[in-house]
Length: 259
Image (cartoon, rainbow, N blue to C red; front, side, top):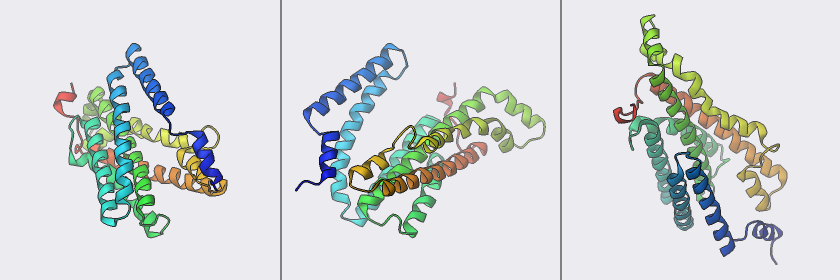
């Protein structure tokens, strides 16, 4: 007998050739709009869509194997962290890998993930650990990139104000933070808005996924709440650490990208 939730999930988004055609059409539409509107990311939209399709196919195959071995699960999480750190470094500094750019991601993700595992809310099970770690690492990466780019851009544009603050007796760290902290803190706004409007504007993936998996609405809501609050904690820590590193001059933009 077919479980009702399986039937609902299949009818909601059946994996058929039609789905592939619709995805291709949507990707092409996104590419054309970005190109015709001169948004400057037309090619990136197309490449990102193709990469996502290939990566998800590969990841789906890999996860099916690694979840059966603890060492493979840990290795997979480390690979996710490494890719996120390299992406953040490239976006912020213009250099594919700078060790300091990886610190905010680790500082934001590790405490939250450790707390969840110590309290056994997240068991050491690949099918649970990998998605939760991915959510937290992804949130930390997004917040770090947004905060880092805005902070360094502000320091470049308002260089004169930084020098003026130094002339008034402020230390280099304090002068930098005085200028870049307000704009960099805005990187937390997407997470705040998502948390404030959950259930009213959006029904995030964790909530919908739990419902389709057969969980009660109350259980789905509890899991979604834990994800949202976990992301707020992770991103807040990541942004705070990123700002400290920028203030101390540990994270800077490469000379080629500062012009």
